[in-house]
Image 1 (cartoon, one colour):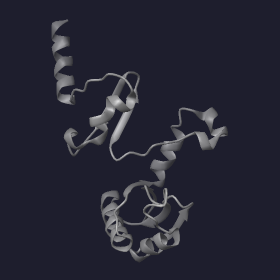
Image 2 (cartoon, rainbow, N blue to C red):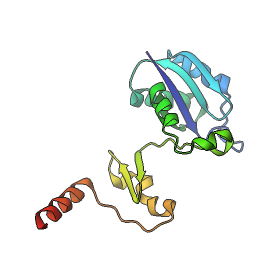
Image 3 (cartoon, helix red, strand yellow):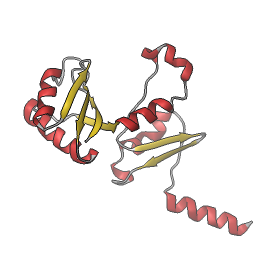
Image 4 (cartoon, rainbow, N blue to C red):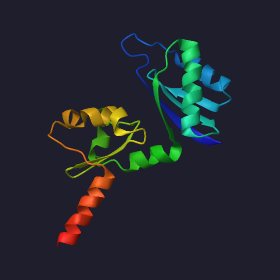
Length: 161
């Protein structure tokens, strides 16, 4: 069994998608998860369970949908992944004002390095909401190329030198 951190989006916000945390804990315990705990009312849970993140997300989504009538977006991280995210904080001085420092946990792998945004979209770029709005979200003009094109262009540039 691994320790998992579940981050639900859009529950108990503005009076919509109400999910009492004690009821969510009960649902997760009903799935056989152990040591289930919640943190504040915005859909944060910690629990121990076996299985892959994808399988657990599917099981949790189905159970929540049955119990509450909607299927919220859920990111699952294991304890090591959450620790790595915290350790990689590029703004250590901001830790003194924790309410002002935010980490976004995404459904797709994204990295911003200098003037390059890296996006890993295993379901295809056409299905990626981030890809569709990347330039708008970043507030800059941008154009994307897949890894094959990048490596071909790099090979062409090397052979021309």
